[in-house]
Figure 1: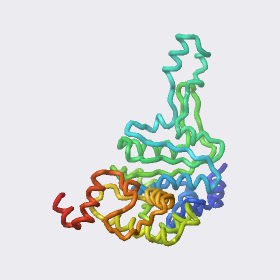
Figure 2: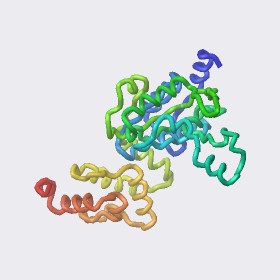
Figure 3: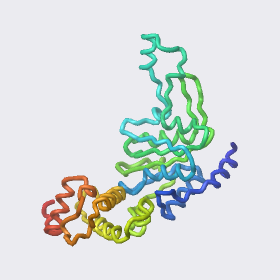
Figure 4: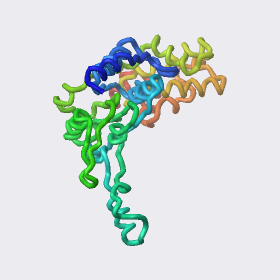
Length: 291
């Protein structure tokens, strides 16, 4: 496929969210621009804003395979392409299992290798890129730019038939190289405002009682405003909390400001629960003095 025809085919792809993933107009536009320009889309935002779920939603909406590459501190671009399983070959040579002269059977494609060798265009999620070594982002873009890789063990060059749709997430744990940032599109997913959050909840629970939802969201956003809480509850915690409230039949607005039912669903750290309890009991000044 020529570069021009490939570009035209990308213009025909349009993303507008999926059944259970509600996107803002700004996010929808930047995803579609990334698709049209065939550039990786770097997504940042606090935990729970749907960075990882964006790739799942994109694959679902466009009917494409989702390939997830979860990055660790030891991850390299090379092992994302393929791994040569020398241990298995040595085992087979010692115990007479299989034909060890067929080296191709010991080549295991990594997630990036699978995305580049796919017959049909996949969605590739590179999740939490900032966990890797500082050189990793630039090495990664080198491979994505070339759209091919060489396997010396088999003297084989794998050339991509189509460019993957690449979503890259970062929790901003470390700075990413300028060269990497220049070659990506970027979007920061802000935490949803109440109106947007209500749309997200209705996408998951279309028949939820509106009184329960409004009461729960009021408590939820008040809790998030407590500055001293280290891990503020996210969208997934709100959805779990609403499930607990619906199952139990308990209203979050029970007339006791200091008693939040199923608090452990919203807050996952003992320190945060203690902080909230002290905040509700004595006010923010007491928490500040304790710090």
